[in-house]
Length: 110
Image (cartoon, rainbow, N blue to C red; front, side):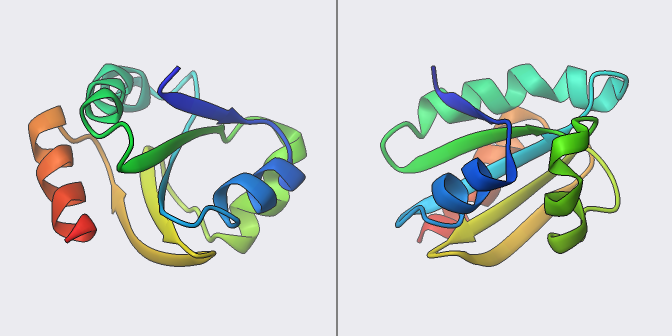
């Protein structure tokens, strides 16, 4: 699978913040229509950039992950947050089509 689900604070800390390369986290919720509409777009980009970027998914409704939402200052969804070496590089908020997402991500990769 090209997108890895994060289900605990420990997984976030080890897998996302511990990722050597570029890690992108899709913060979403099932009730969020823009999130569910954007999910296939994110999956398409994750397939296109496999091996260059590691994609993660974090359900903001998971009560076990509230600490992550607070420490990462997630105020709205959908949000894509870019990390490298444990540091936040950038973030995108709101619905984006696959081609726009991929272009923005490729700019960060450069």
